[in-house]
Length: 370
Length: 260
Image (cartoon, rainbow over all chains, first blue to last red):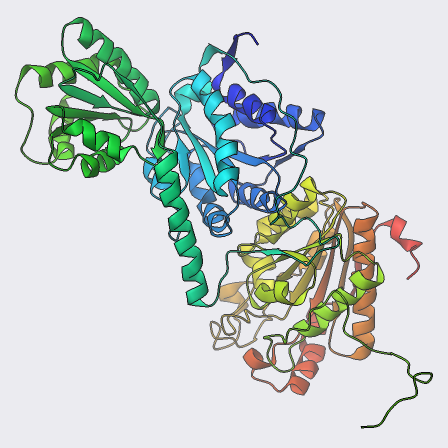
């Protein structure tokens, strides 16, 4: 295969097709719409299911129904649409069905804007829908990575009967980069042994998230929690850069991580002993890796396109092992590498901060920036 | 015990194969049991039990999956037509049905039912209209009649404050994607027979790929209406029939020749 110049949303859509996507149900919303548009012609020409739903609420429930048949299914949306899908996501988690969700995040809260942001971290990583469930969440920082993680997301969803989310942002969805798409995979040939696909010569099956007897519901919850432990043990993914002799570590995911990579490279050229950890699986979160790292460095700088939603997870991992500083831009503003570089220089130059909460210190610095 | 001569024995009535022998949770006198039995009989008669996939909704209909003996899934409140769409689009050779009450279909699920009908989604909807929210204890539904007392319209439904009941069959019959819509009632044997015929036609429409089909079944809720089952049947006849006229609201011409 050769590399081609491809737009992020189209790349993810085509990667899903080649990974064996059998049903897609979606609704237009910027900056995600090209995904829907690409699949609107690609799926029918391959004889696969495509419906433009009347709402994100309907789209996620179409996915819910299609997932019950054992098919490889997906939907995609952007932040306000994802909020609407939370009901269905909770039901799908409670029914233990595999599905893939692509969230191309934009500025919020509310209608916000259509610029890139990362403020869905909490609603995607820490739930959003009701009940005790977790989703596997993979955050790419390039179009090639978005393609690869989309393919992987179907495998993980089916392996763990879990929701798997590809968490990207408007910049990844909208930009074009050279990337290599995977070979077309054949569609699956057999149905899983739980699928409601018609009781031909077998006992009937039913799929549901209702367990009226609390001890039964608790058993399901226990199974979900135990499965999550397995996922935590096996599916942590991250990328690190220049960590060997680093005294300062920058942590950022997705586009913020990519911007931070540029800043870290420049800082290294200036002789600053700084490295970078970019979580790819933000759920399960690489807590153990960050905890170990925090014992070897003087400080960590968390960079996000939100008000520090991942910061809270980093703080829990770091405990009191090292100083933590935060730098974030919100509402669809993307930080420039220079802004992150300034933070790195400031921390490399002086004492690591110890007083107060990193979010509080950041809020005190912010008025000068906006 | 008397023994019956095997030669004289003739089975005239039995539980449908598509209906389990689990006792239902419905209140005494409730017509859900009749509605479900009719659906099961039709599925047996059409010999489509192995192709059938049902979608239960939220409300008293929530446990429908316990009673039907074929594959079933359970939808969030109001979303059964969306789930059914997902199933049918993947498995277009199966027979997909939703079983929904009036709060589910005509209130929280209006967008899903309207658009499933507008898309001509090739599914069959069994819509049980008993003019209130039964499962939560008799609150006002979009189908509650003007003046009807419920726990949330204690002085009787005041249309000045709460608007008017929705006639779902008439509303959906206006959409081009619809192949068959009928409103029937379960208040006496004659109407029950007509209801069964309508259910059969609705599934025949789906089997022929004609598009969206629905049967609205007027039903009683003696417990929440505060009436005995017999009084409730009479109340339905006297109050619901005038507001919700029975009949076929849309019949695809291809169904006219179907002999049942």
